[in-house]
Image 1 (cartoon, rainbow, N blue to C red):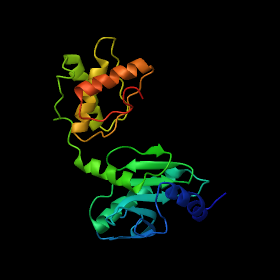
Image 2 (tube, rainbow, N blue to C red):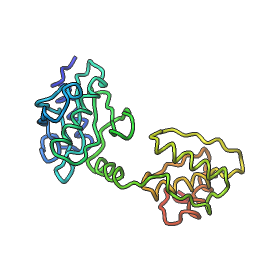
Image 3 (cartoon, rainbow, N blue to C red):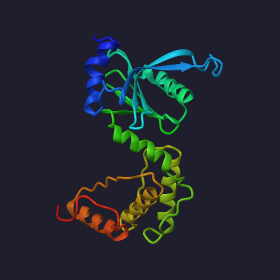
Image 4 (cartoon, rainbow, N blue to C red):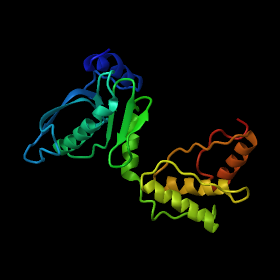
Length: 242
């Protein structure tokens, strides 16, 4: 059984290193990050850690600004115990330094949870993202446009039920839902509906890469041809014949 200090040194440090973070480089990772909480600006009930707080790790961007908080717990307890603490650290670092700090992790070494604050609920992940990935997430978060006003290309999918399906998914995405199921019969334009949805999401900045799964090579080739026809300027992989 490892205490928190050993968990950090023997497990969490290594998992950060696997993602390219140099834990001894204070331009990348700051351990025991000192957070000063002004007791006059917060309510004691809302901030039980008023005074000095010490975040186990703060991951920094290339500009030296905090990108994410990592709250560590020992291996013998549930990682979720650190959830609210990690959130509190993010909010208090924002108050201390300004700017936006929306990402936090909480972990017991074995289980890692990623929380995109005020955006999506926490989710279990299987490793830490790289610095480049975190910076890309932050950019996407700031740059994306509201989907409610995004136009659907009806030249790709213009039937009423196709447009309604795409709009329903887009509305659910803005409500921070993660899973969607469209049930469409043969011949109703499933592929074109998906292409029009991908097109809208990419134009609005909500998607960069899309994984399209099929169960037969022939369907893969048909889909690649359809994407090539309707979104000719977007790269595709694999290309035909590969």
